[in-house]
Length: 114
Image (cartoon, rainbow, N blue to C red; front, side):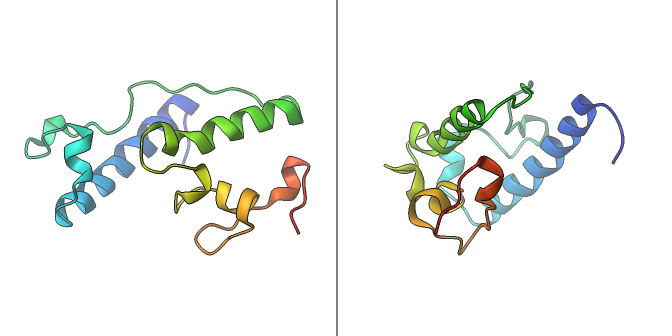
């Protein structure tokens, strides 16, 4: 894949949105109702925000601030009570040392979980 970061993100968001929405539609998921969208009209299939923010991680403190923010997104969305309860969150590795769904290399963040 080539192009600017904006072009790459646009393509990732476009294709992932189609896959996610088609899966949810096929499964008759209640999540679609919470997304408040009409997926019967192909033009209304927006899942992601129009913009994205990129930021260079400059030190370990900044890494942990961003990681905590990411981990708390599922809590903020009302999907779970605690970040580690979200099935697809790396918080499961950091808090429970559980990598059954997602394998996480915690050494990069300056911490080793035993």
